Image (cartoon, rainbow, N blue to C red):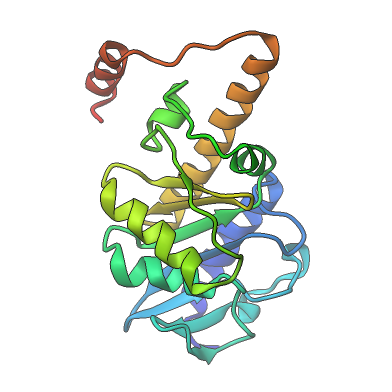
Length: 210
């Protein structure tokens, strides 16, 4: 099997994301850039609990299959990000509950907590793009290019996409975003939460070295 180490590393992150409910069944997809301008990406239609390293798809930056099973239905979005956003070395697209909730509310997420701040909040909701289309890539690329500090976007009525300079970082950004969204949601049930002021944001960034 070619690219065995890269496939096993991707599968490890996939199983971590599955364990904490960022992805479920076969919903959501994760990818990472590997050598020779290729990408390792989760395959289409395989439940994560049954996935094996050899199932991982190897594609080029245009989405052409090089090896493995048929790649994710969101391949066009992943490859568009890789072609146009150099800081993106890995992409984690989740169908996590709170990401989906706020993607359906279609409202940008303020800087409510540190978890959202480290994702580059305020987190925008991308314009509508049908799942699995080239437009889904276009709208995410446009936002990531316009916001260099941003690592997470909500996909309208769809889910969440996080980018990072490694598989671990993309996963951690997706996890932080989901945690921040969950606590924001629950605080709204209890009252009216207040976002950080710019002064508070500056203090946190100085303290964390952000």
